[in-house]
Length: 584
Image 1 (cartoon, one colour):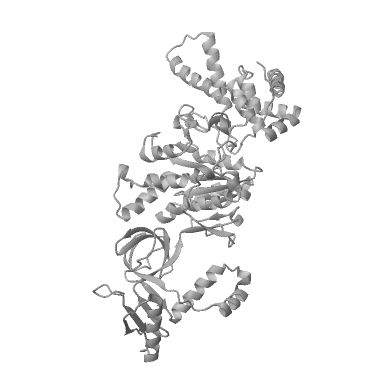
Image 2 (cartoon, rainbow, N blue to C red):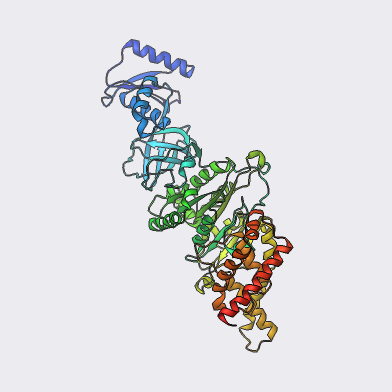
C-alpha cells in the first residue's frame, strides 16, 4: 500500500493483536526484503481465524490457514499426480513442502461485464498473463491501463463480484501438450471433453509463441497430398504451406479438410483439427467420421463450440497451434485445420468491443490482421538444424455471396500462400469438390508436387480454363464446328473426371493413372454418365496388371517415360474392354 505521498507502507491484518516481538520480526522482515524502513500498522480482521496477512503495496504475504492451504494446493497441481498415485504423492509433498515467503500479488475486481473483468492493484501483471479469481475462474489479461487492467474470463463470471480478490499466477496462457492428446477431443484449455478420462501431458507450451525466423526455415518442397485430384493436380499443397480454403456456407470447405486428414493415414503426419464456433453436434459427427475411418489415431480435435465463451473461441486456434508446434519441434510433420477463422474474428470483435477498443473497417478492431498473421506465420517447414519438422495450415474462411473482397477474406488471402475457392454454383450443379479453377491458386505450385504428378498433370488447368471460356461463348451459338464440339466434349469429360466422392481420397498412383489417361484423350468418347464406372474400372484394371509400377510411383514419386507409355497402353486396352461391355 502507498500513503497519500506515494510512500510504501505495510498493513498487517489478523484476528488477534500481534505482540511487540512479532511486530519487531515483521519490521525486520520488511527492512530486509525491501531494503528500507517500511512503516507498519496493524488492523483487526475477524475473518482471519488464524495467522497473519501482510500487504505491502500490491504484494501480499498470506500466512493464514486459507493461504497455506491454497499454496499447498498449487504445489500439488504443479506435480500433476495421477489418480492412482495421489495419496503417496500427498504424503511426500506434505513432508517436503515449506511455507512460501514469496509474495502474492493480489488485486481487487472493480467491475464485471459479461466476459470481461476490470481489476485494480496488479501493478506488475503482463499482457497475456493468467489471473485466478476467488471463485476459481481463470482469466487472461488483454488490456493494460494506468492503475487497472481488463481480462477476459474463461469460465462463468456470475460468482465474480466487485470487491472480490484476484491474484496473479506469473504464467502466460498455455496449453498442456503431448502424444497422449492424439485420439482425443479437448476444449481450448486442453481439458478432455470426450469422456475418456484424464490426459497426462508431456509438457506445457505457451499459446503465443514467436514464428520461426527465415534462417530456421527451409523451402516448401515436399507434397502434403490431399487425395483430391482437383487440388493435387492443379493447386498442390506443400508441407509447411498455408493454403486458405474459402467459399460460401455449405460449399464443402470442411469436407476438403476432412478428406485431407483421412489421406494422411499411414504417412506419419499428425493432424490437429480446431473447431471454432461450430455446433457441438457437427463436431461430434466429424469425430465419429474420423473414428470410423481410423483417422483419430493420429488426430486431436480441439473444440470451442458456439455455446462456449468468446474468450475460449478466441484462444482455440492458438491452443491448437501450440499442440501442433510440440510435434513440429520434435521433427514431425503436422497438418492443422482452423475451421473457421471467420468465426474466430467475430469472437475477437465481441471481446474487443467489450474492452472498448475502437472499431475500424466493418466494425472489426484494427489489430484483427495481426490476430491472424501471428497465428498463420507459425506454420513452417523447419530447417534440418531445427529438426526438419513441418506444420501445414489449412485455414477456412466463410464468404458472404462469394465476396472475396470483404475485410477478413482479403486479410487472410494476403497472409496465406494461396487459396482454394469453392463456388456455390458449381457445388449445387453436382461438381464436388466445387473448386473454381480461375480464382484458386497455389503460390508454391509445382515445387510441392512429385515429378510423377507434375508430368502427369501437364496442362490440365489451361485445358479447363479454355473449356470454361468456350462454354460461355457457345451458349449463344447453336451451330458449332466439329473441332469446337470435340473441345467441349473433352472439357466436360475432364470436369466429370474431377468429381470425387467425400471420404474417398485417391493415392498418388491412382491420380497419375487418371491424369495420364485423361490428358491423352483416352476418355474423350466415354459418355459422361459412364465416366464414374470407367474411372473405377480403369483403376482396378491397372492396379491388377502392374502392381509393382503402382507401388513404385507411390514410393518414389517418379514416372519414367517407359512407365508412362505402359500406363497409356493399359488405359487404351481397358477402353476397348469397356466399350465391348457397355457398347459405344
